[in-house]
Image 1 (cartoon, rainbow, N blue to C red):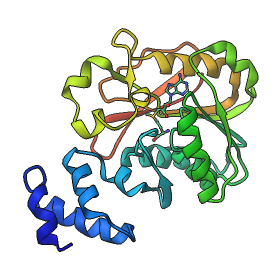
Image 2 (cartoon, protein in one colour):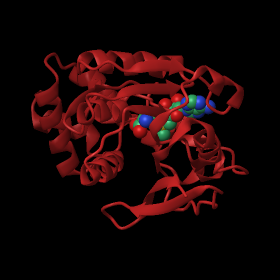
Image 3 (cartoon, rainbow, N blue to C red):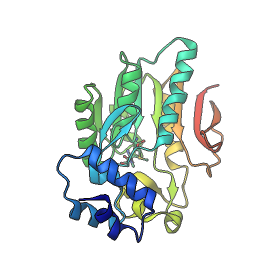
Length: 258
Ligand SMILES: C[S@@+](CC[C@H](N)C(=O)[O-])C[C@H]1O[C@@H](n2cnc3c(N)ncnc32)[C@H](O)[C@@H]1O
């Protein structure tokens, strides 16, 4: 199909430059293209990465479907922040846990940066873990994936105790914000990856700090992605710093034991 033919139906919702990008990207990433099917999916606002079936994250190819959140560029910055802390100190984590691994993108990149570390990646979603396992295989890394509802602290007994690094990009969007969100996110990305009850936006962070008290080594680090709107409460025993993303928004937290 020519660019001109592809543009016609899409021009009602996409700009010319977007259509040109879509056309070039689809041709680059896919061999057999069913243009009619793809056009229909794009007209329904389905994200391009789900249509293509993969994305790229910190130089790794990551398979995605609508059981996993599409990895975001700012999450690459979370990893940069983690790497810088260790690189500057010339020591590296031995044991890492990721809470809410989704596609496995964070754990996979951490394994590439810290090849000797044992990495445990948990998620409540069996379907997401299937994708994460495929991604670990695709990228040739060994990661221990565990299906677990992290909010049930009784289940933590089954996990190791001496993590040097706890990482998480947990769900943090209050349900009330649904009305302000774009259709491509709201209609296609898994809600379990996105939302928390309006009454407890800090739920996952509170649980992570509770977990850290008994499962993080004394010199260990916690890194989380957060919303720029969340003002984190203080947690006893931890020194918590907020870190900004490239656009200057408070986007990450880094915590250590006091
Ligand atoms: C914001 S997504 C992050 C996915 C991936 N780590 C990333 O950064 O692209 C949050 C993930 O947390 C998982 N999750 C939600 N509730 C959970 C729970 N109670 N226990 C464990 N994982 C949970 C979701 O399934 C989802 O994969």
